[in-house]
Amino acid sequence: MKSLIHGIILFILAMIIYFDWKDQEVPAFITTSLLIMSIILNISSGLNTAILSVLFGLLLIEQHYFSGLADLKVFIALGAFTQLWYSFFWFMAIILFSGLLWKVIAIKFLNKKHEIAFTPVFLLTYIVMIITNMV
Image (cartoon, rainbow, N blue to C red; front, side):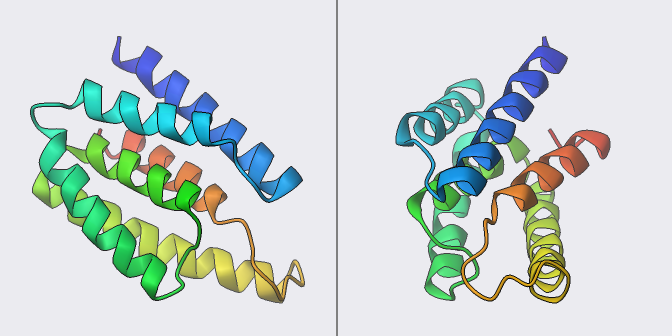
């Protein structure tokens, strides 16, 4: 069951990346579905980390770390999947480190000077979360 859920989430994250790269806009029903699914699947334990994700996500948007409602919804959804406090803080560390690395790669090697899609960072983060058994 757990691997099926991981597969569904990975598929949804891949769809989000596709739309973000193609159109620079992600359909709201995809990100909202991911958010609702994460909260329903983790209603007892993931609600606390979802609330933390909202607070930290708003702070990251305020600091222009990532932008857009789609990024915020995916961030909250992945944060809700962490379920445990210490896992949430590792999740934040992975997001911050891989996000900075992604921005450097995009600017230096992909010659992106304007807004870049942040969604590949979420996919990488979720894969790391699966490998390290954080979800």
